[in-house]
Length: 282
Image (cartoon, rainbow, N blue to C red; front, side):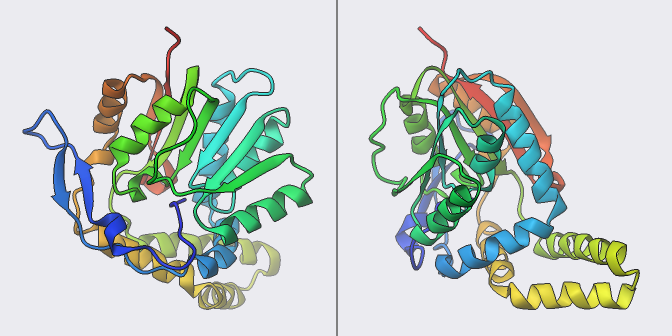
């Protein structure tokens, strides 16, 4: 989930980014087109509707949760999700490990309101904080795990965010990233979600026409999420995506001081990389 503002994304927030090039040892600064204007409040209202019918998204939640559980977090470990959005990933972890002290961070209060409503409904002891990740982070050697799903790619300086994550982790703590490594094909994504909706309705009604009508109605009722995805796909199509290629991202993490414990690609319809990296104890 991208870190989200209350009303719109400032054009300045996406003006410059760091990318790794084949011919340079250091990141190269390149100009980027302004991020699209997004009504994140409306997006928050529709996001969970889309997540609930997207089988690939649900599979990603399961995989990320499993990876977090495999990290052998200590009892009552402190876990922070950055760009937490409506909380689908951190709440999945909280459901499996209710002993964890989970803290969710996002810039948009409506996202966090949805997250906390779900946590309250499930009687989960999760805390939330509105925070701008582009500002200096106040945490030093504090967290046992930092979780970042579809968050790093949206930040104007991903390298700086990863450095701050390293500093915010206690020695022995780990960073779990799931992020998009290639340009989003929104038509492919919409067709896949539509197929999931049709399959679910066919199982209930046996009527292909009713199932197709249900898919059409769903996208009409949740049009803002689709529009935002198209806007971001067009935005990122103008910029190199190499900074999120698995090998480059792993190299960047190692240069910062992390040790890579697990790394895989091909998730979420072949869009996502998932990396577990640890800040080793001295």
